[in-house]
Length: 378
Ligand code: PHE
Image 1 (cartoon, rainbow, N blue to C red):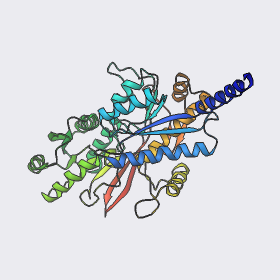
Image 2 (image 1 turned 45 degrees about the horizontal axis):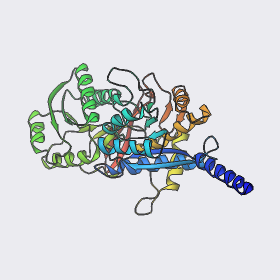
Image 3 (image 1 turned 180 degrees about the vertical axis):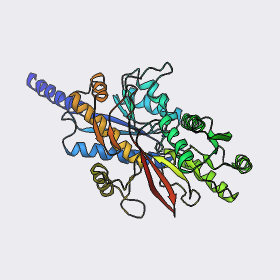
């Protein structure tokens, strides 16, 4: 009897430690909702990084197990997903969310719980910094921030497009679009430009004719539309129908395989990487991604910036865990603060606010294609 018990105990212990040996990482991504292409790319990028680490033996000798949740780029579903992975699944690491308006409320749950959150793509400063200006100790991102992105859009409009008059339209309820609009306005004025009009809408609007009429009357040389591709598609189509031919410019939110390249012809946006970048990191990733993922017609996929940054964010995290030699999040966050990581999107080191200092890529839309324009260093 005693022997049977001992065997049972040893078995239970080894089964127990085998379960504990897995290292869980949550991926919060908008698989449904207004911007599903963001979610699919993010999931694909993160899972590819995890597969590659697992193929090399995992991290700390443990197998990495992803837990993917659909957080919809929206505050409430994202908060529910964060609570679920922290409280039910017991995760200590989150890759996500994608959109700033979802990443900010998630950070407010993760940070006090000492759960590390790395947003691959959320560019609003408030993701990593609280309302008093203090850095949230456990929160990081793998991308640049909107004051930089919005400032470059203003500079590009004033200098390259030679615009003196700009019109701004943005979603007043979206942290991302508000932040970019403000950064653009400040820098455009600084460069001597004037804002010919500034109009807001809400995320449920689908008819932009009233704003577009005002744009026609104001006759600007550039229109800032710092929103996600779903809104960009509606606005640029309606603008073309109204005979508005002035270029629209926007930020990384335009990046999608579902961007309407016909309606947005002649427009420009800022992004995090370009597939024609010859750097070894970029070309190696392109090959691995193409081998792993095919589009609906069976053709190998070219990763967008969301896939790249999700891959980078996941690698950053796993590298920091490996360097810290523990999954203790306080030690892992210290490792992240000191990291120097050669990512696909560029060399990543963190400033005191947990923001990487990285270059930005400008893209233009021409002949039904997205074309590399230039790179701007910080
Ligand atoms: N930067 C956007 C945000 O903060 C998210 C995004 C990044 C969308 C990159 C598309 C591509 O909300």
